[in-house]
Amino acid sequence: MTSFDAAELQLFCRQVFERLNVDFDSASIAADAIIRANLEGIDSHGISRLAIYAKRLQEKRINPNPHIKVVKRGAGVLLVDGDNGLGQVVAARAVEEGMVLVKETGVAAIAVKGSNHFGTASYFCQLASSRHLIAIAFTNSPPGIPPWGGVKPFFGTNPIAFGFPTGTDRPVMVDLSTSVVARGKIILAAKQGEAIPAGWAIDERGEMTEDPQDALRGAVLPVGGPKGYALALAIELLTGVLSGAAYGPHVNAIYDDDASAANVGHFFILLDIEKFMPVQRYTQLMQTFLEEVKSVPRAAGVEEILYPGERRAREYEARLTEGIRLSTEVDQELRQLAADLDVAFPSEINKGGKI
Image (cartoon, rainbow, N blue to C red; front, side):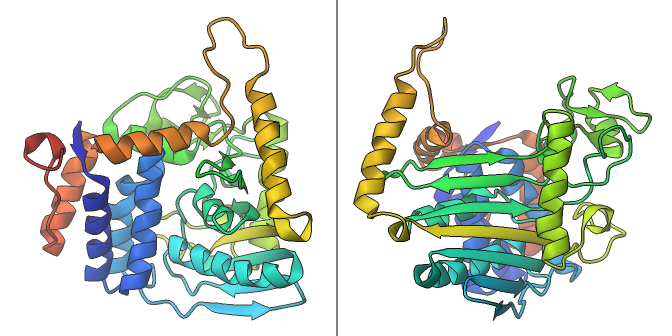
C-alpha cells in the first residue's frame, strides 16, 4: 500500500470532477465527501469509487450540471429532484435547504429522487451536526438483499445514519447498512482480489460464499436476519416509494455498464435542538450521558468503551497526519484515471511527498 496526503487527494478528486464539467462548488462538495470517507476509515465509500463516478459522468449517465429542483410541500416538507446529479451534490443541496427550513419549523422531512450513490450517509449528518441539528439520513441502493427466505436480491443494502451533536468535534454518529456488511466492502474485496468472511453473502444458488465475485452475483445477507430485512423494506418505502424515486430492483447499479440512470432515492429528517431545549442544556446532558456510557464496567480485555462515531473521529485525526493508504489496485486505477484526463496525481508521502 502507498500513502497520500488527504488534502492532495481531495484536490485531485476535485480536479477530476472539474475536468468532467462539474462546476467548482459541486466538485468541491463531492471531493470533500469522498475523502472524508477515507479519512474516517470507510475506504469502500471513498476514493476507490472515483473512477466509476468519472466513467458515468463521461457517458452522461450522471449529469455533471444538474438543475436541482427543491419544492416546499407543507410547513416542514421538502421534495427534491436531483436531475440525475452526483449523489453527494444532490444530497448536500437537499440537506442545506432542509437546515434553513428546520430553523423555522423545528422538524423537517426531505424526500429526494433522481439522485445517485451519495457515499456515506453519516457525511450529511455531520453537516447538520455542525449547525446544532440532529439528523437521520436514509438512502436506497441497487438490489443486494433478498426478502427473508429468498435467494434473489430485491432491496438495497439501504443504510441509515443518525447524527447527534455533542458540543465537541466528535458527534455521536451511528451509520450502518441493513446488510451484514456494506456491499461496497465486497466490491472493494473483489477489486483487491481478497476473500470475504463467511456469513456476509450467498451465491446465486443461495449457498454461503467467501468469494466476492460469487457474492456480487448472489446476495448480501441482512443484518439480524428477518429484522434487517424488515428495516431494509421500511427504508425502501421512505426513499423509493414515498420520494417517487426508483425502488428495489428498479434502482440501477452504477457498476452495471448496460443500465440507465440509477434514480436513487434519499430521505432526511432534521430536528432543531433549540426548539426542544436550549443547546447549552442539551450539550450538558449529552456530555453526562456519554460519560456514564463510557464508565460502564468493562468486559475482560476491553480497554475502553467507545460511543458510535468516536472511532471514526480518531481515525480521521490519525489519517490527517499519517495520510490515506491506497491499495495497489486502487492506486493503479487512479493513476490511469489521472493519465486519461491529464490531471496531476499526488506524490506518495513515503516517496518524496509530504511527511
